[in-house]
Length: 318
Image 1 (spheres, rainbow, N blue to C red):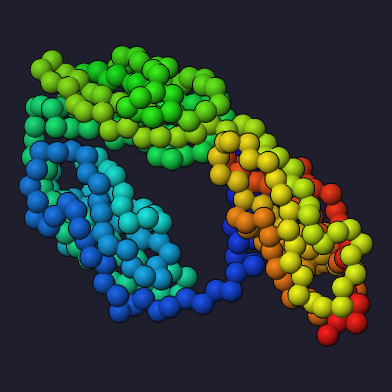
Image 2 (image 1 turned 180 degrees about the horizontal axis):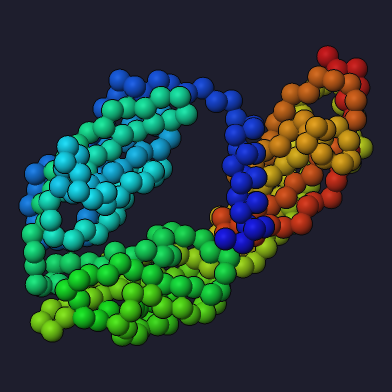
């Protein structure tokens, strides 16, 4: 991962944590309700979407899959933490158990366990290829894309199809038969749908497409509205507002910094938050000068330059 992008993503995470009042509910007594695949299911389908009900106040879920059982583990197939209540994974024929627990920063539920058996099959007719990269709804800031998907043992060949915009109506930009499970290519900025179909001598699988966006354009520089520069106030309730052009790419959030001097160093910051609306309200009490500025960050990790810096002074606060 690009070091600058990694830094930005880490910073966003820190900022969201820093400006949120966090109070977590104890979820220890909650139960994760598994939905699909059903318990004790026997099937010849290889790719499954593991699905469970959301648990209130959970931040993440731990999904584990083993073969054949958790009491007699021969192989750990999967152990991953996810933020949503579903996860797609492809398995080979065999017997499995899968389980899920929910957790937040201070508590966790117990695991709920289901069993699953996948029978051998020689047909691809009801199968789908598990797509690995790009992830569904991904926002990428690189034009160089390495498409990756999971191998199906009974497949001899794969067809990679990439379309502009929507899968059902978009123009085809890549339609290539391959004997590998990846392809390096270069694409332009835009929204894409992609899928892979596997084939052997007597059958073909179905496409199960995913979408992603390529966005290499920096967001527009935020334009500060209020308070005006050198604003003086006698009340500590201040609402900051600004505007910004929408570049039509990936989703954009804004980061506002409010500091007690012009350096905006960590020890001088009064506020450091990412927001989705063009405003932020704070309560300040100390009579002194403050400075503020805003930067835009899109979901692909592109950033604008900082807005102008403005000054406000709190005088005789009440």
